[in-house]
Length: 252
Image (tube, rainbow, N blue to C red):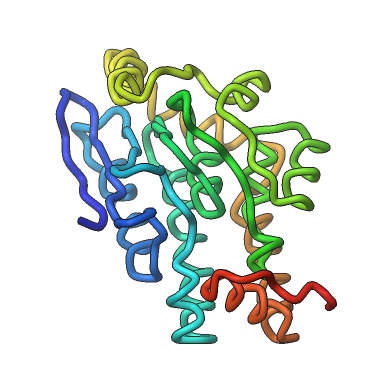
């Protein structure tokens, strides 16, 4: 369990998130994920990476219990770990196909928003609950998946949307039954793996080069506000309420 890098088809690497019960990642695991993705892209035999998860959901984001237990050190660590993992998806030298089942929340949006292609199961949902957790971040990546006004609504209300809604925006290549998710991801990956590896790698580099938003800088800007909320003491109440499974005090 944790992060596993495997291969089940020629030219394709598979990076798997497996952190029960909900794939909420601690500091070390975010960095492990970044390392696995970077290593996969640097392998000259790899032409495409499939990023997927085990369990009932793709990713529930950061491990809030770790932040509450370790304080500043964990918050800084997870900020850097998320930035590293999201950046590793974006900067991976080959295309990344994300296969999403169940919930995709918080940091999961950062991974999927930076992926090149997304496939999802029919039960998949996508959301940023950061406002309810005393944090900000990954709106950078959500804005790559939905239009601006929808992104703002999702951030302010912390309300998720379904895979079908996401697909209507053109952000998901296929919505399939859960049992067909991995096969669908590998179907697209196989098409890419059949292309010239030199051309595919240059295509990835060129597409990143024409992006209108620097996702690395934009995300780090968002993270600054997360730390501000933490320093002001507002974030701690939101996080502790989540850990305690109670309604947070929203008077501040």
